[in-house]
Image (cartoon, rainbow, N blue to C red):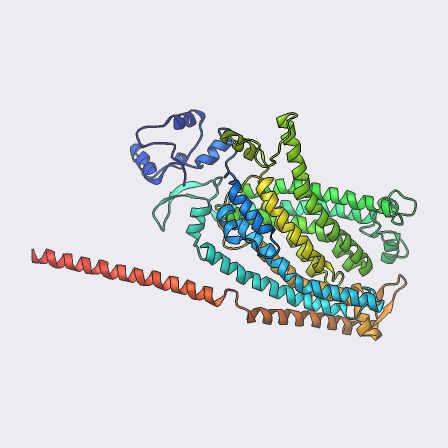
Length: 600
């Protein structure tokens, strides 16, 4: 659906004449294009006749600043009231009708996760209280590994039942089984570039871009991402040194003689965390400084990489909005999850210190929850209030929603708001899911805290979406896309990580098999050489058993609810039946006309 710049094949509009004088390309209809090609004595329309949609042309050349829907306060307030309710789920149909399927799926997923977190949350609270009652620590608790097993099976079912809910919602929204042509029709990117050609299937004119060219660009983008991840790794290694996670002790464990240097140990940076240093780990306040600096560095890197990822995804020239968004999500997802988990994996795999891992995990989990609330709701609200006061001088506004009731005033306020980026909301929920599943044996209480965090998050998201950001353009979706793949990867990876925590990072396995372990000179658990192969075999046997159980559990639960399958099959049957009737009726008409012609 686009506006035609040309009125017909013979006469140009004033806007098209202006575009022609500027050398700006624009889109015209298929029939008009063929008429223009015939007038120019061309066998087929030239690629120079059309490349870009009118909306994109207007934005690119400065004729239009912002193209977006405008909020309707009455509908928005009704959605907010229902979302803020504690006794009912979010109004998904109303959210879908107002914001589109993409936003509705996000709120549905958040509500699903909040409800499902209650199972490991209650169990994790029980484990925490029981461990304290028995006077045990996370290091030597013998029943905490059982929580890791339950958390893995819970994650399998959680994702599986989300797929079922997703299928039901997509059927209700009318997006369950739309084809590739439907995706192009409802979601083609305005910036998609290509040469015009006749579609060999439909015979209609279309923009075409060779797939092999896009694959080459994707490979280049992957190389750029790997290089940037290597740069981020350097920042993380420096952070490990100044936070005291890598110290002289690690160098002694690596090579007591000192001849072979530890590859991640940098003496000057590590000395800053020594006693009396500016980042002294024995001082609570000094030790907080490098953690805050790392948080600032990570936020800065993520912000800069998001711009690079957007440019790379744009350069790859994906045809549909969905493909473009999935490509962008995958790039940013790799970068931000790397920043979030790299230190945790270092402490779990190399240091094998579950006490340090738990401390880092607790700090990251709790601080991240507060950071999300501040950066997404409080800070944007303060910035908007400051901007409103600055624009209105000394006058005070009673309504922080729409300062001007006139049409121009409303549009000015809406255009001045920031653009909504759904990635930030999804990545926070995904990283939270990773904290709960990947390191379940180190922090069983994480899922219990996540329940309250998600309750606040869903309500702050509903409010900020309606008041702090421009209303997003609706995007037609049938699922949450790449995020579902990331969930599956985390679930299956959690089987390995929790088994590793159980066997090598803590003394948990030692409580079950004491004869297989001893203690090294640095107080860490160490395998007895005679039984080392047996211990490794036990760990991988448990891990493989979890995989098999997980696959079996998934097979017991259908991905699509049976009633949805029946409705879809019924719809397909009716469609095919109507087509058969139409063909039969057409055949009868043709036969009758043939008989009439023979009779004449």
